[in-house]
Image (cartoon, rainbow, N blue to C red; front, side):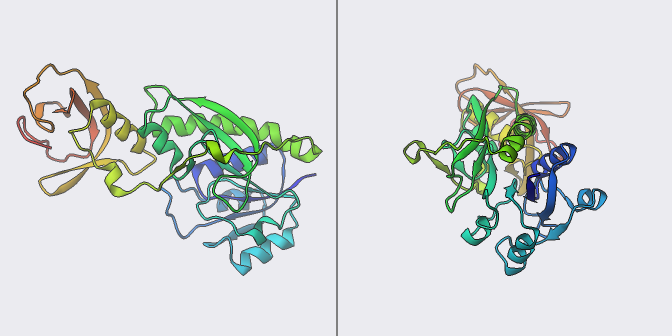
Length: 294
């Protein structure tokens, strides 16, 4: 039976681990991090391992001597690394005969790098992907094991797209684990000529500028909503989180971007470069007045 060492620390990791347990996979050990919760979608895997009697290692450094020795002693056939931001060093990747299988929610080799769900929504893409690949010393550049396309609807936001990708990925796991066990899997080499790499998102990428188009603001907000940090704007010296907006047509051509056109119930209608957006889910404790500027 295929001996799997599992690494992860986010909600997707949790879903994948539970899927493997449901498949009665031979999990010889799980590595996670219960200290440094840098991911907004962080998930604790320790209780799952205790309940299912799976050896567990808590570490902040996958490349430490302690982690290396722990994995080596488990003698895994393959390592699954699903949801960990630290790149693995070569000596760790060589501990399992089959290597390390990683996961990236894009259509590799397109859109390697950081924050793939956030950037896909921010850029208004109509599709993304779910890709499992054999990790090498590059970033998301190894041979592809399994890949599926995931369509992005206009109504999708970070939470719904995360769920879509997870659903597809769990089906892939059910398909490729038996293939790995039987040695019937295939490897598809990525083309570096087709690749691009997305950068790490910064604070300013989440700052709403109403001089942008309504669609760009809509995409920005839906990309950063829960489980992520939220888009934001500054009003009267306070940083206000914005979680959901709606695009609105506005025929007014002589109104400056950022002006509050209307306030009703808990909704705030704001002029944009080419129309208006309605702020429908936000963290304003005191609503702005009509005529204010955001």
